[in-house]
Image (tube, rainbow, N blue to C red; front, side, top):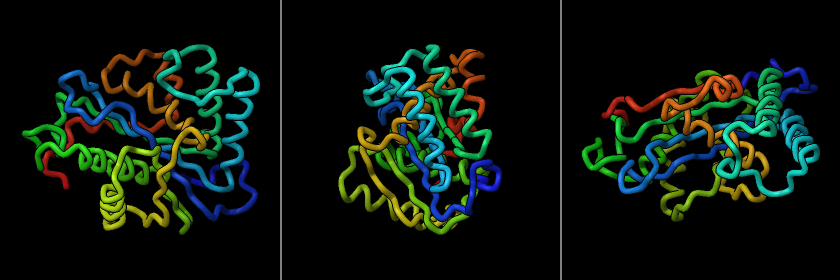
Length: 236
């Protein structure tokens, strides 16, 4: 995230936060599982966080929204949702937030860990970790961080303690990634910015499946997007 671009910055940031959520399940695309999988990241600094929250607070107030924001409960592009996206687009253009998304179509996917014939076999947790790492690679290519206090905040996945420790080791032992001081698992019920991330992640189902119309593409043009369906099968 280019902190220097933000008009609202009164002092240099001291902390970076990247909120991450997924859309779709860990199934292989058969037997009723989703045919797509997406992972979305929203990046904000401590100096710009309050400005992003102002947008969310105003949205809740003017539209009478009191419940948890969930993408699955929203129409694809209702007038309210469009205004929500327009506000976030304005935040992005002012350097308040930076957003990235990676997605894939499961039946065409050539990378590891999803199918029995994939590199490494079918390992759902490793598949999730691998896709998360692809998001981080992609995001930090265009939104480098400037602080030493870096926190990754994940919407609470159903993971054992061992799985969480393995994920932390997997991310922290990669020289291509900036050092993450904290990796936090939280529930979106009480973390508003994760709710925003969920609201943005959901529509990328349409991008993955090539069903996004011009209206949706225009509304989400502020998000950097990468299709990783055909990623190298031997990529570690």
